[in-house]
Image (cartoon, rainbow, N blue to C red; front, top):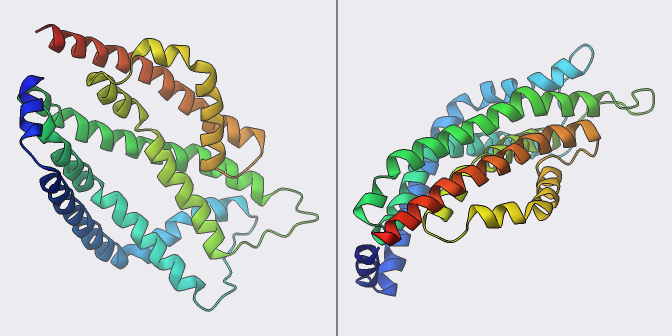
Length: 251
């Protein structure tokens, strides 16, 4: 740990800020390039995102636009989200390069765990939201009191609803790997996480409400269940990271 501290102390504040600027620049370039590539497939992606809506509305449906620019705004939003997903490995790698000067040579080897694990968990979160969460939420909302409400959603509202659910569920699934590395550097412990389980349940409920604005209990429970499992997994990984930290201190 002394080696890492010494390396970090050799860099001034300006050098840290310059390194941050370089990493953010590379991340932005990767996002821009991936977004440009996504423009080619944006129409196919829009049709793909329409599947839960078409399956939920009898006879299929199309999305309406209420403003002249709403269609193109939605098109750009989908391309940007797709670009963010494609560029995620590079963005994660740039983040790792930024924090790596403060790590020891042994700790730097964790890049081979951090990036693949974070990416896999992100994709698992998106898969869960797409195959389980989104169909249930959209079916309930599209068929709620159809004798009174006509299901005729706008493109911007529907696409924002689905993409927000997919993206933030993917981010939420990265909680275990983040907790592991935070515990690995000695910031938190597994015992502290266990003692905060009441606050964790409240936090999970708030996060579930942010991920999906649907207030029906089925959707909320479907969202909260994997988040609670991820919290339990985080405790286990925090214990592993804590032991590795204590071992490195002892050495």
